[in-house]
Structures are given as structure tokens and as C-alpha cells.
Length: 269
Image (cartoon, rainbow, N blue to C red; front, side):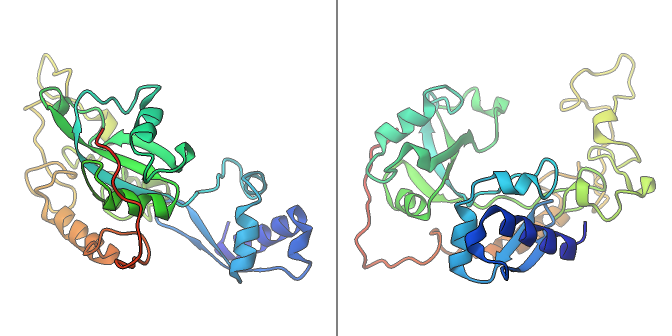
């Protein structure tokens, strides 16, 4: 579906869903993003507010499997005690009860996860970094200013394509996705899917992460490392450009007035 088709169909669905938008209602624009999402822009803030209150049902009529992507404000919390388990059933309530001074509602907490997933690197650690995703700018800004360990704004790193291994797009929208010759393994850069990469030794290694028999080669810079390794100069160039684009010189979401009263404080986890 083209952007123009999405624009027209979405406007029609929204008019049918909410008659208060009026028969002359239209959307200002529609853009397909590199990560597979679609951004719709209303003509006025009042119309955008009405659309936000409609819930998620209208978007399923636009395309199967579509969901509304709600604004979210992730922050990194450093020095979280290792005994705190973000995956536990009570993690959200524990975090909220300990920090009600700046996270006023438990529903403000959208997600809690370790910065690097459930990696083995945490086994011997006494503390780790946590990514806390909040639903409002106020809660995110207040948490950065508060004393919940050491906190800063978190920006999602740029996506890497699983098909060609290039940066800044995903495989579902890869411009080379129909070209089988462009398929590249993230480990050895050969023309096969990363999931099918196998150890050439006999007997084969069962853990490819620790396998020393696969000759690592980057599909981007052709260096002797995996395509996603931090030592890759192409990855570093991409990350540098990404940071510059998102202006990480500040740690707040939206405008911030340092003279205004701010809810701060809170208790450590």
C-alpha cells in the first residue's frame, strides 16, 4: 500500500469511526518509516487529540495486524541492585511504590528491562543498568531529575537489517529483500541467513557464540569481526550519526525550564 493509499484509507476510516471529525476531515500526511511503522499527521492538534482518544480498534481496519504505537519515554537507570528482577510479577509495583514522588501512576510504567537483556554478563554483577519506559514526558523528566540511582534519557539504537546487515532499516523494508544474492550472515558474511550459520568443525560446536571455528567477517566493512560487533567502524559511524541526530547533549524529553518547580527525590530501589 502506498503512502497516498494509506492517507486516503486512514482518513475514511477515521471519519466513519468518529462523526465529530466531520465529512471534510482529512489527514495532513502519511509516511512509511524505516522500522516498518507508519506515521500519520493530523492537520490540527485538536484533531490529533480526538484521534488519540479513539483507542486502537480503528487501526485494525487499516491493515491486518496493525497496532497503535503509543508515545513512550525510556530512561536508563544505572546502579540498580542485582537482586531486583525486572521480569518478576511484582517488579512494576515495587518500582512504583518506591518512587511515587515522580512516578505518580503505576500505569505510567510501560516496560522494565535490563539494558542488555538476560545476558550472562549479569551473573557476577552486584548492580546493573535498567531501561525504564514511561508513558508521559512528566514522569520521564522527573525520573531523570530524581534520585532513583543515576538516571539519563535513553535513545533506542538504530536498527540493523537481518537480511543485508546494513544499518537504519529492518529486513521487512530492506530495499534488497527480494535479491537473494544480497542475503548476508551476521557472523561470516556469507550468502545465508544468520540462523542457518553452522560450525564447520567435526564435531560441531553447539554454541555458536563461543565457536572459534567460524571465521568472522563483517558484511559491512569486511573486517575480521561480526557485523554487529562494536569494533566495526561502519557501526560506530552509524551510532555517531544517530547520536547527533537525536541531540543527546541534554537528558530531558521536550522543553525543560530549570527554574520551574519539579517533582524530584524518590527513593532508591
